[in-house]
Image 1 (cartoon, rainbow, N blue to C red):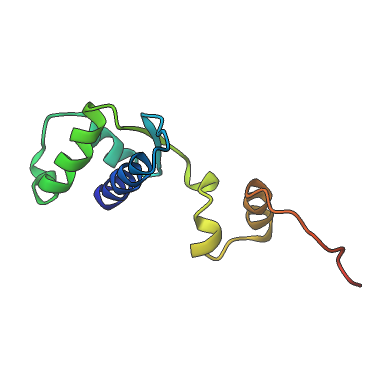
Image 2: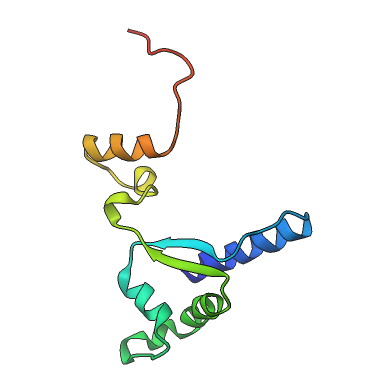
Length: 108
């Protein structure tokens, strides 16, 4: 999550330098509920000590109102279309959400 937040910052700085307005908070979709809870909760637990710096990066941007983390179910994760082998039903469902259009009719 921290790497993605840093990339979002970089892109927003670049767009602002080009005089393109960036609406904040930027929606940040994640399929890991534990990571979302750690982001929103300022209390560190023993099990998250190894994530200390990454958590601070994400939490600071969340507190500043730069990102708005939200949960998205793994079944609705569009990135899975490119990274995982999916059943035909899931593949077709996710493919339809990409908004791709067929330019030429299918040949028989």
